[in-house]
Length: 99
Image (cartoon, rainbow, N blue to C red):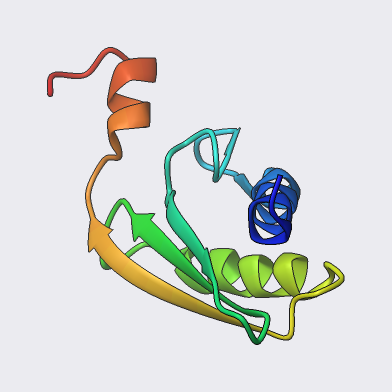
């Protein structure tokens, strides 16, 4: 396994500690984490989807992502990009909502 893949897996695993209190699910299982990229300098870019542009928990979630990712050895900086709004496919499947 490459170091980048190993680091990506560690980050994804640690992000499971961040819960969306409204859903009672972690942000990985809820499908809010859309992508994780790591450059050669240890800068991590995490793509995040939120349910709404007015999500009252967005600052809490973004700050949690930064704190968790920065706690991992090898991570030098963290950028969080909000890439969209809506119900992630993972939540639609979980709650059997129409696609």
